[in-house]
Length: 101
Image (tube, rainbow, N blue to C red):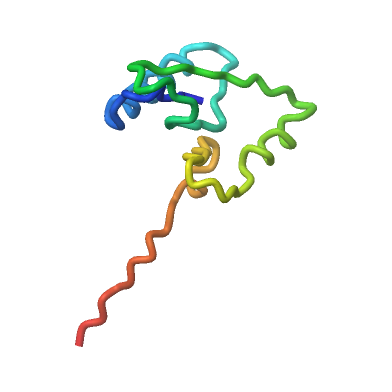
C-alpha cells in the first residue's frame, strides 16, 4: 500500500508507485500481487507518503487475497490493482457506441 499523506499530487503518486514497484522487483523472491495507492490515512495536507508491505505465506495467501479483493461500498476506498491478472483492473465506463445511419 502506497499511502498519500495528503499533499502529494496524483502525478507524483503515480511516479512513486512506479519507483516502489521497480525497487521491489530487484529483490529475489519478492512478488507484488496487489497494489493499493491513494490517500488512505492523511495528516492535514502533509507532504509525503508511507509504504506498507504485507508478506503472505502459502498457508493463508488465497484467504487474505480474497479479503483484499472483496467489493466494498466505501466511496473513499481506492480499490486494489491486481498485478497477477491485468484483465481484472479494467473498469467499464459505460460509454455507448454511436450508431450511424
